[in-house]
Length: 280
Image (tube, rainbow, N blue to C red; front, side, top):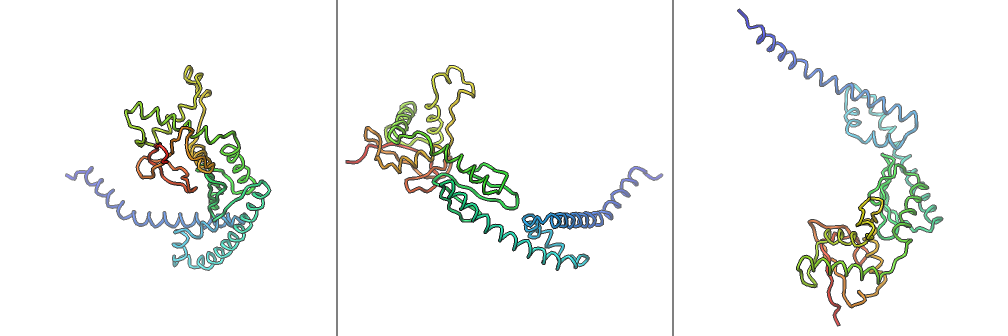
């Protein structure tokens, strides 16, 4: 007597193997059809930014090589040239608009498209295809120059347009450094890991009220961007060191580091911080 269960299981497996290539081919055809429909919709909206991205994708190349869709090759090629030309024109206009609006806001923008920078510590990148601009790793869901300049101005105000005393700043850094080496039984001049130091420095900025009730509303934030800019402004001030004659040293390295602006104005991975007596 036949084992019906085993027989039917074998039949199912055989049919699956037969259907598999057909199903795969069908899925590819559906995927290509949906892609062509998407191109039609983008063309209808004259969404040349999206078209430019789509027509440079792998699936577009696959369609152009598909013998069953050979008519698409010339259409895609023509549409791709159109989109690319429009994107290039838009890029030129965007750069001009960004420069003009930057001048109106008294901001000197350095553009190496798609990247740009304003002052030290403010960097951005424009992502055409996703209609997004990243400024200091924060996403702005727009590539409108007006909104970009507004976001830059707001960040510039936070980082640069506030009371800042370079002498007080470097003295406060040294005070925190001295506190850390005392707790860690280190000698003066020994390097302190920058992550540990940054944490201790942020803690030093908190008021007594915060330590009595550590509600987040009472916490005084101090971003890494602000820390980096404050260090740069200290270097720019050229005061030479602390009021007691100690000199700051930032040691570059990999591993557990932080990106900070060095004395040359370049972003660098800093792994530790220390102070030394200034040489006579």
